[in-house]
Length: 335
Image (tube, rainbow, N blue to C red; front, side, top):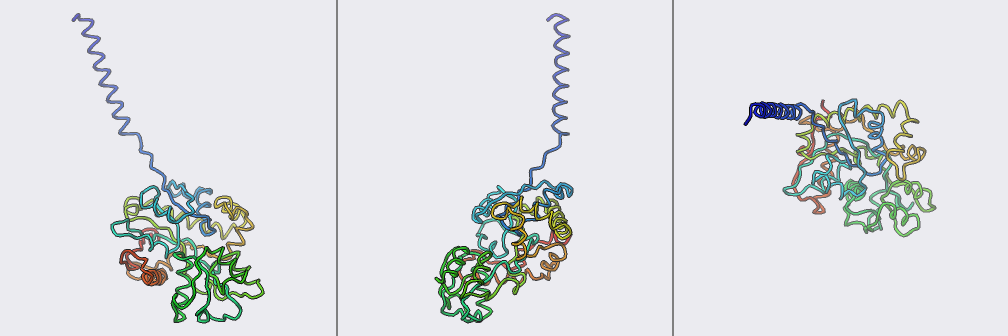
């Protein structure tokens, strides 16, 4: 090999090594882009502040990238959560218990979103004065839903059980319609059917959720592995949520616009959103701290969870044995 050729080869070797070093260094120093934290929800007024947290930039300011994912079917939501396609979901306290499976993910409640304060209820014939009077009557509700949980808690408090009534299984909307048209004696439903039921010639409001605070509460739920791996993001989401709830209180009109647009669906009209909002109460920092309580001494969440465990166990719907304490994490609320 000629001297000139050898020199060229030497320089090429040095250049190749330098390029390799640059590439390696670049790979080491280029920041890893964190994947968004995916939180699934359905179309519900109680989830409105999530969109304020997103659109007002609270999530970003708290240092977390959140992707809100609409999934109407709760079964699809839990399947996605178990498969790791989403990181968290919003649902009622009692619903989570139905999706605990042997060998499956362990779920944890990390903070509460809203409490039904009249948004759910029981409309009944005027001859039915108390829950105890439902004995032997046709009562319409959706089996395996929060409506079944709700009516069973009320029946239990009245010394009855579901076997004491004639169950008519249908959706909440169909239940309300069936009551208004006189096909059932009572219905467990929500707006607009509570109002329509009350306004019917034969109907009145027998009970609504404002009479049982904390019984129907929406929460954010995460699998245990997500809780361990993304605890700081969960804390940030909670802080952004609290800021959003505070914003709703101080800027209601602007909030209704943002939330109606974000939630969409049947709630896309800000006026309808505001009217529906009257049936719930958002949980901010103070409410969450009271509801969750402290490690070793749970707040109202314990009562709601124990009611749910008792009710669903009675129907043979629980696949694993749990206590309220098994399901609660204070990682967000206690920060």
